[in-house]
Length: 468
Image (cartoon, rainbow, N blue to C red; front, top):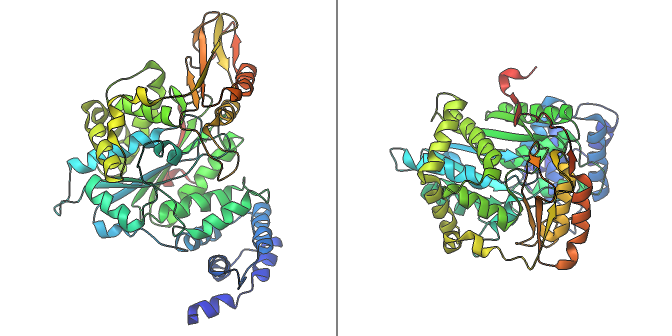
């Protein structure tokens, strides 16, 4: 044990818990000691117990963290394991993160769009001008997971080390990976216990979890997509905005330019929700097959990519960046970058020649409109749970997921419908799983005689300048 570790462990975990329990601000040393003890414990040497970690999480849930405490907790978690050191590439490193939604597949489009921009303007050393080291997650609850979608591609390896990721970034300008045991191990431990201690919803713990993983990538800038509406993880607009402000402030404190967009999640994004079907939809878009039901997905993708291109110095404004993003999509450059990324990470690119043919559910069912009128409402979270019940998601970490389960939406909120018009097609690999999701969807999809005014896709933009 080093001298630094000896001094760190001189702070006892119970003292840290008591201080936060009593509403006191923790010192930087206390926070770092607690996180270090979590990571360094072994089965034979319990420097801190699960019960003590649970007590710490509940104390934070009840009393919150001030900006300094949150920044220190995020930093301690960020450096609890390996970090990417993408600074060594001498390029502009940027990423995007979404708080999760239904049919939210923008990452599958944004990574190749930014990669195409980076490959088009290499540095003098031949390194791409922009790189996107994207660490993504798996589906949990009603929200989908980018890794589950990517792993429907045979051979695609999401478990790259940071050294392997840097090699892919040099070649392809983007890499799509998951959190390995060596990346932010403190988050893995805290995340697992949050689910069992009633502390999942703490905005402070959510912010530290998200930002520690993203900042471990060595970013120059980060764009956050924070969902609001019935399908959002946070229950109210105010709580979503508070979380966005926490993450922007934390990123800026760590000298990473950070912007958060509050985006509407009142219905599934795009045409499909599931795993392979979402890959199929994105590949179609990159190959210039633009289905009308994908219009909102394309719009949000271009807006988010536009902000990233602006922050990276490729566009004078986010609006100009959004135009550039759409030009890259329409030119076919994003599709070429996508194929390059997939091949570099071991994936089979031949599937994308005809992605529809790879969709092989064994059971389907079409839900039709019960009456004429307008589609005016749904609980998007319930739609997400219906997708999960079909087999596309997981209730707890480690559950298997189906590649081919999911739904296709045939109407958007506000659309005029005729009686018996198709509303949703359900896909599953088990016919016995169709009944419950059908009942859930029939209950939540609302058809009325009068149309509604939809919320705008972008509700608000949070930047460092807008923080109070």
